[in-house]
Picture 1 (cartoon, rainbow, N blue to C red):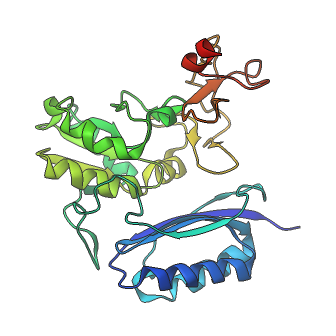
Picture 2 (tube, one colour):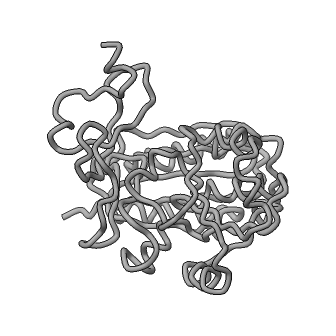
Length: 292
């Protein structure tokens, strides 16, 4: 019986011909029957693909045969076999859309000027020796509604593109002299975010190496992580153990829940935490419910 798997990966490295990489990746995935999303830019590649285990393994072997991608830190997780509706491989200005392509500096070693990397164990040690350390969520705010690190700073951003304005707003200037550890799903957003923060005068910036995924693999739900991890595929969320806390609350009745759904209004980008009762039908966010 086939075992579906999902592969999460990124590499920051200069790519002189992103379109050639796009075509190679498209044809490679098609030939192996993989689906998912891959973004290529002049600064590297970022992707999540899924399929039957033997074919995903073949994909990763072929991926690593290209010298700039040889050292990729690939992260594996269980799939369902229906996690992605199709294959999408695109060239964009950024592999993570912060809206600041001219600020990112990349060489063969990766992002230049980003935060120092911390292992999951290193994070615990830093917090033990430097209790004034701030954990800084590098994801969209709605993702943190169902899972986040304990006592983390969660910026009020609906999209990654809002981070630059958020950092420039002065709201976090009180953290500039403190140790800050940025974290995100698999690490790619924090590669960029940590460099943006350093450029704006944050003095001691770290990034959680491998993101929440690697932390969850190491400590599960017996460390500092609380709740479920939102993922951008058909699974919607993953949990690291059978005793994951439920920290989200239904937007309509406050019942505990870790289920996120889209507002039913097609023009709305709001994500809503819903319980089983209020997930029935087509829930609307508060603004569109009033207008209905």
